[in-house]
Image 1 (tube, rainbow, N blue to C red):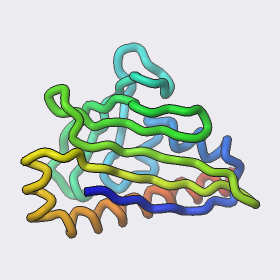
Image 2: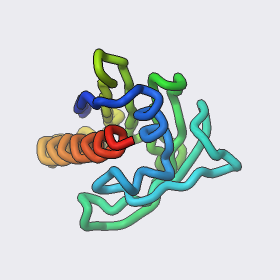
Image 3: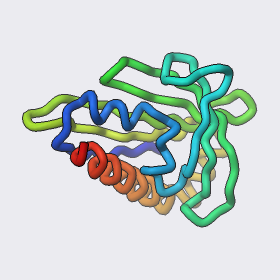
Length: 151
């Protein structure tokens, strides 16, 4: 009930970080989440900050808003957020950056939180959704790479 994709970018970590940690730019990169807005006076990532993302499931629908909260944040290194439903975490998404020779290695990951519903969902649609998530993460990272490497 989890997956990850890693892409190496020929860009400085600070450039890549500015792109992955700015949730208001997610619409440029994600094939599913086409916009996000900070909540509660937040304007930048910080532990506990909240935002909502506008999602178009599988890029075709249905369309809905998700409430998210930053659960892990180390400036320039890690950025993770929980997707919340009725105050409970159902999924976690995040990015990890690692400087490498000539650029930055970026890993995007997700982890569906175990529950009766998510286990049933994963049994029925897990492989298909897992592949969809991995394709989406790769597409997101490739779009980020294009912008980062052009900077």
